[in-house]
Image 1 (tube, rainbow, N blue to C red):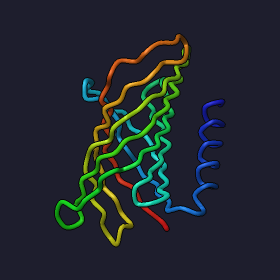
Image 2: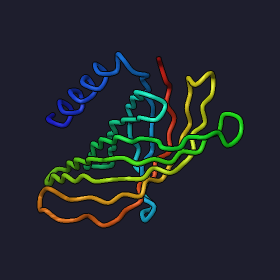
Image 3: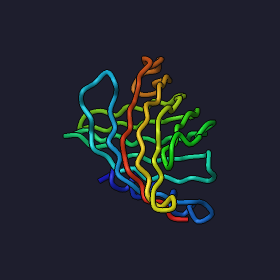
Image 4: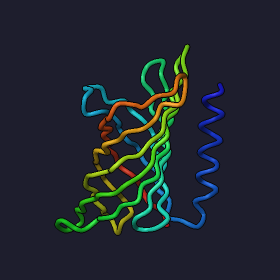
Length: 160
């Protein structure tokens, strides 16, 4: 129940802030290059400009739920061909992992590298990227996390 309240509160906060920005909602599959396990998830995204992107991700797999927040600045997003674009940026992440008997919290930096395809006058986006990341684990114990390579594949519908 606490997870549902937390997710609902975060969604309301993000949607409330979206009034002045472009707003996107989509479905995203997340994984790690070192793992063969991709977990389904929902992604809520806000773009305050062509280069600033924020996302709230909720991934669910069995008895484990993960809520992740990302804030990325795309330094490059040039066209490759037609509606296909290359993306390269820098950003921050925070992950909250909930399971039946555990809670973890970590945060750090990331470098998203990938492609996005904008269709229907930028209304529909298909994207994929890898975001090499490193950070600090704050709970249950303090320490540095290993370098990891999260991957995201998804679609979003943009309004605004």
